[in-house]
Amino acid sequence: MHMSCVEGGYKRTTMKLKDGVNLHIIQEKKFKTVQILLRFRSKMSRQTVAKRVLISSLWETSNAALPTNQQFQSKLSELYGANFATGVSKKGDNHLLNIAMSVVNPKYVGSDTVTEAIALIHQAVFMPLIDEIGFDEATFAREKKNLLAYLDTTREDKSYVASTRLSELFFEDKNLATPSIATVALMTHETRQSVFDYYKRMLVTDTIDISVLGDLTDAEVETIQARFSEMPFTDRDPLTTIFYDQAKSNVVREKTEKEAVNQSILQLAYSHSVKYGDADYLTMQVLNGLLGGFSHSKLFTNVREKESLAYYATSRFDTFTGFLKVSAGIDASQRSKALTIIRAQVRALAQGDISETEFQQTKEMLRNVYFLSLDSPSNLIEQAYIRTLLPERYLTTEAWLEKLAAVTKDDVIRLAQTLTLQALYFMEGETLGD
Image (cartoon, rainbow, N blue to C red; front, side):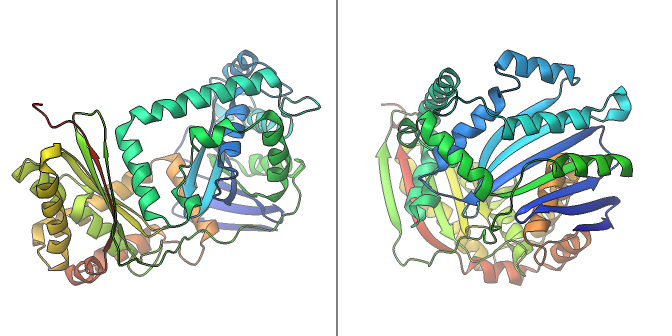
């Protein structure tokens, strides 16, 4: 099944390789590189998250065709310094496991870099370095040790720790509260056998999307389709849900922990009901921009500048989980004052305390950020991915700009009135001057 369409100056072709396995090709002339993204998607689960992180690391290190990391790296050098990176992330209640490759466009080097890149992806996914028990013992032991050491260092990243704690307070579903990169406790139990058994299952059950973006000829598109069609993918039931919904609670869950840090961290989690592509999607963008998304926003100017209560004060939101986070770095002694003023900023929006200048400035900044994103290949792939996932919710550039222009102050006020504080986390550091 093929589907092609042209929009925004580029041509997009989608091909179903198997049930639940799709190939998307975006012919876009403005980049000198060709980007390939292979994305495996399943429900976020405490049982599998560490296994997926380990697989991600193993993919990047070696495979049966290139058994050492040195061989793997020299293969990338031969491909004119190609970039091969793996990673994990969360979107809604889904866990994403990615292989991203970037190679110079064949026409600049007179060599078929794209076909070679696809061959390398094929080796990574379908030709792992294994023995009769599981993943290669020495390689697995090294990668697990490195990941445990890395997860251990995240304890030193205090804002990461605070964000994790806030998620634990906010999300009732413990799978959602788990970091996408797993935890030391979850990683410790995994063995080369447990991960390999899961890996074999993942290959046949995960929903897979492959995206290729670049200045490609129609002949190159056909070759790419042929190469990916040759891979041993099988039919699977596609994962169709991504949004996470949680009932609002009347109770604010609070937690305070003492840490040996100079700067204390105060984080608040509000719930909101806006989903990606909703009627209020752009209203939410404007609300967040006014609250804490930009340097002219209320949190920044009132909590940080006017009151000098915070080293930083920002907000961000997620339209796949209904989570809006406010973070501030403060002195421990200023907790109650900072909390009062932060909550007053949310109330100010709900009461319509929005000047015409800040309202227009926020819209202008959102437009700028949006146009900048169109110059990023990874952002364009992400857009195309969302479009495949949620076709009825996807906003074209025209629709996005139109909806942004249509947002009124009344819309922002109405939406601000629905924000509900759900969780509050305070990492109390040493009070300065002790």
